[in-house]
Length: 462
Image 1 (cartoon, rainbow, N blue to C red):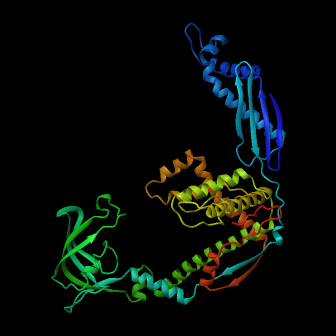
Image 2 (image 1 turned 30 degrees about the vertical axis):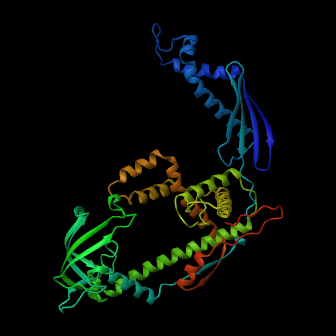
Image 3 (image 1 turned 60 degrees about the vertical axis):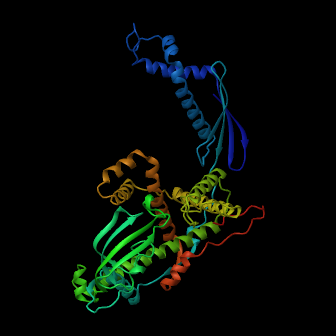
């Protein structure tokens, strides 16, 4: 085997690897000898089949496996002998192959950059914090009360208005024919809730108990049932009762209906939940602040192949119809649009550069400080994922057992959070109390863009 380096650039190496016909033949013989221990042929016991017969019958069959193994071994040897740190799987291009002359291929490998890490103790961050106040607790309780409202019969003889609940029987037809699911009885419909399609509820405003109303509607073109998309329908409606919503009084009795002893206990639990949400938002904002600082403190070339892969991932989700990009997610694209203008593609490329760059910085910090995800942490994450699918836990476990890539997708954010926590513990963090509106606004701000460097290349900005 001969390995010759043919190209050396900043983050790229290229090698020409040659294996002689004799080397390949030797590997084939070794494979056939292993196969011959178990294979049977007429007139020969297992393990006694002559090599020429084995080669004649199985030589072609094992050739592909032998060549793949030879390429993998020689590629690994080239990487190890040259102390390379590949950023991605090397690209292999076979130049020539002949059973009589041997194999020649070119291995192109992109390398991880050398990263000079900033001193973590020198990183200065600001943490915005918000406190759950009585107003937030009151508003949350009002939402809970609204979700638990009841209704009572309207005794006065009046017409239905928006916000009322009408108890109706309805029977719908399309082109004069009944359609499954378009008939119901004693249905409580809150006018203005938009529970029914089109202007159905609007047409019941002004009706009284005992009225019979013909309601005509048109189903939306994107309606869930394809046979009703854009179709006109007619409903015969009987108004049987008029009710008005009644929100429960927020007191100890209300608390007991929710499973608590007192209203004070409900308020305590609600406050804790709100504070947990605020704290999570504060952490997200702090993490983004950290990523901005890390982006600013580190400058190095990023592997073009990694950027291209990230960029393609963004475009794929772009085509999926999303409309917003999260530039702070390190491990992969979160969302994008459906078509890409030149300006959008440039923006996506900047996002890809930033993600790859920050991913490499976090990975290097983790590597140098021997940060790892334990099996227990990974198992807990998989269990948490399985709990999201009650009754299908076994299938979820089997899925992750059979799909290493999916397991890596679970592992990646755990690793990222551990590295982020490691950095935050060593950074200088100044906390500042703000309102929840300020915290929310800060979390939505775009990261600072960088100007072009002196070389004319844009620095990572997204």
